[in-house]
Length: 119
Image 1: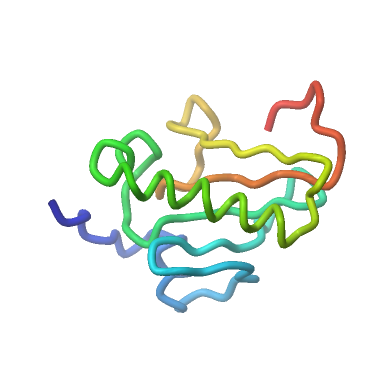
Image 2: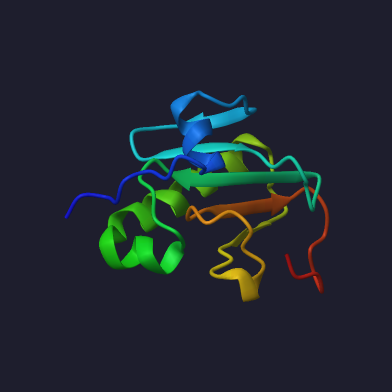
């Protein structure tokens, strides 16, 4: 089943297409990773699938291999950023969980102790 059409107002789709600038730190056939504009840790990178699904649950339902690709890209970003002491990978799914952009995405957080802190 093909991915749904990209909404015209999706900021992440615009970044993927190159229509909006972003500090891209990783890209491959399935994912694009860029620095968050409102970082919650010294390293805060968003990893998004090139296909548009509103959240991680929809992505997992329709493209489960893309979820694995997001996690793999997140791991590559963490290694490239030198997060040897550890990092956090976070999916926020739905407004009640803090999701504000409704294009599935994974947060890579690190660069300081995250013990006792929720993203």
